[in-house]
Image (cartoon, rainbow over all chains, first blue to last red; front, side, top):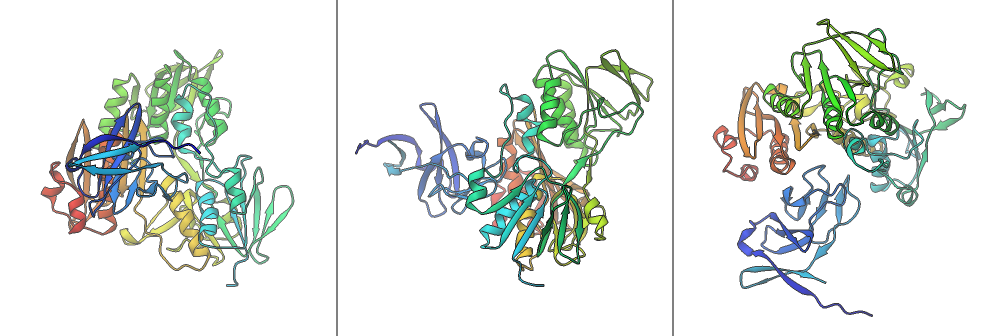
Length: 108
Length: 413
C-alpha cells in the first residue's frame, strides 16, 4: 500500500467566491473549479467538463449542482457524480479546507 | 392500452438513443430495441459541423452509447436496418430486409434529412450536404488550404461550415437567398454580429442573391448567380434547411402537420405510437400551444427522455424552453425561447463584445433571449434567462439592461 501525503495549495480567499457560485483555479498546468455552496461549504473538482472539456467555472451553480456552460451536462460538485445528459462520466473531486480566510485545495 | 413489454425505437440518433436510455433509467425492464439506418451506434451530430471538420486529427465518431453502456442497459441496437412500414393493427414494423419487429409501444425518432438544392446541375456528385459522419468526412476532404469553397445557405449549418472552411485555410464564398443571414433563426442585431465576424475572417458574403444553375468547369464547378456573376469553385456545400422524415408515419396514416403531429405527451394520433425530435411537431404550453417543430440537439435529447416517460404511462406535458446553440470561430450563439414571440427587445452588455438580447411580449413577459459572444461570457446568463422564461417571469426592464446586476437575483423574485 502506498500512502501519498496531501499537499495543500492556497487557491483563493474564501470571499473570492460568492455563495452558490464557482471560480476557476489553475495550478501546475491543471485547471480546477472551486465551489461555495448556498450554505457556505467549499468544494473542488476538476475544472473541465468530462463531455467536451469546457471550463465549468463559466457554468451556473444551482444548489449543489454545477451545469456545464456548453451543453448543460450536470454534476453534483460535492461528489462529482454525473446527474444528466449528455455527461455520463463523473468529475474528479478534491478535498478543500479553510485556513485563515483562505481556501486550500488538497492535491495528492 | 396494454402494459408495455416491448418498446421499439425507430431512429438511433440523439432522440432515439436518449429515449432508450431513459426507459432503463425509469426502471423499464421489458425489451428495448433501437433501430437505425446508419451502421454506427448512436453518435453525436453537433461535432460534425465543428471539430470533425477543423481538428488536425482525422475525426472519430463520438458515440452517445458505447457498447458497454448498451450492454449494461440491455438495449438491443440494430444498425444498418431501415424500417419500411408500420402495421398498426398488428403492432409490428416491417424492415427493408423483410423481417418484422413487434412492439407494444413505438417511438418514431427518424429525424430530418438535408433539403436538396433544386437548381439545374445540382446533382448528387456536384453538391455536398451534411447530416452524417460519412458526409462530414467527405466535406472535410474538400477543405484544403487555398481551395475555393462555395457555401449555399446562410443558416447555422452554412455558417458553421464557412467558419470551419476558413479555419482550414480554404477561400469561402457564402450565398444566401434571403436579405440577411440567419433570417428565420435569430434577430437582426445578433445576425449582424455574426456577419461582421465572417467578413473579418475573410468570407465573401452574398445575401439576397439566388442561384440560377450549376455548371461543370473542367474538374471544377461554376455557380451562375441571379446577378449574372459566375463563381468558379472547388467544392459546393449546401445547408439550406432540413425536411422532417415523416414518410413512414404518413404511410401508416398518422396525422401530419409540419412533421409527425404529436400531442403534449408526444403521442401521435395512434395512442401506442409516439414521436420525438426533429421529425415531430408538438404544441408548446409556454406559447399558447403554438405548434413547433424544432431541429435542435437539446430538443431531441429532452423529447427522447420525455417520450420514454410517456410510453411508460406518464401524463406530463413536454414544456422545455427551446434552446439552440452554434459555434463559429471564437463566438458562440445561444438562443433560448422563441424570439419572434417578443416584439420588445432589451439589451444587456456582457463585456468582451458579448451581448444578450431579452425578448419581451407586449404584456412584459420574457419569452426569449438571444446572445452572441465568447461562450464563457454568455452561457450562464442565457441559462438564467431560460429559467425565467420557463417561469413566465415579467422581469424589470432596467434590471435586465443593467450588466452590473446579477440575473440570478431575479430568480428569487
